[in-house]
Length: 139
Image (tube, rainbow, N blue to C red; front, side, top):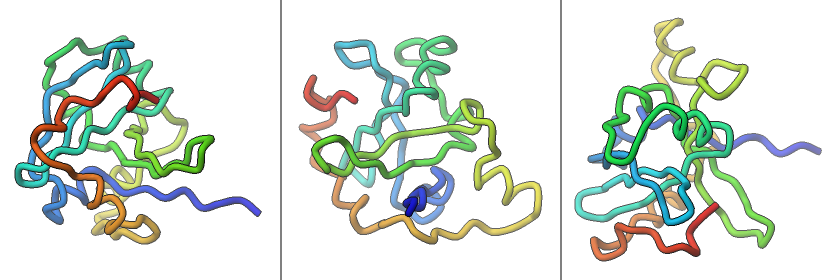
């Protein structure tokens, strides 16, 4: 039995007020790209998925404003080898398929969040002193 992909568009997160600001592009000590979402003054640093990270690394540099790149991005809920829930950013630019946001735009539809656990994602937002992720937070 295959598990359904749990995702939500960045657009939906911004529209619903879950994300109130997005940082410029950052790289951790290992060179892996991420952005920090803010919910008020509470940060949540989210790394790019593997394929999207390769695209980001080849296109952008530290402190670039990548908001236009995130227009059709989605936050994907994943589980690591230890069974811990993690969130990754993915774009259709790194996929063979259109994103939910692109499809909604083309077909004139409003996006709906179906299987993404918004309450669980909201718990990922911390306090201002945790804005910079530690080395252990890498992919």
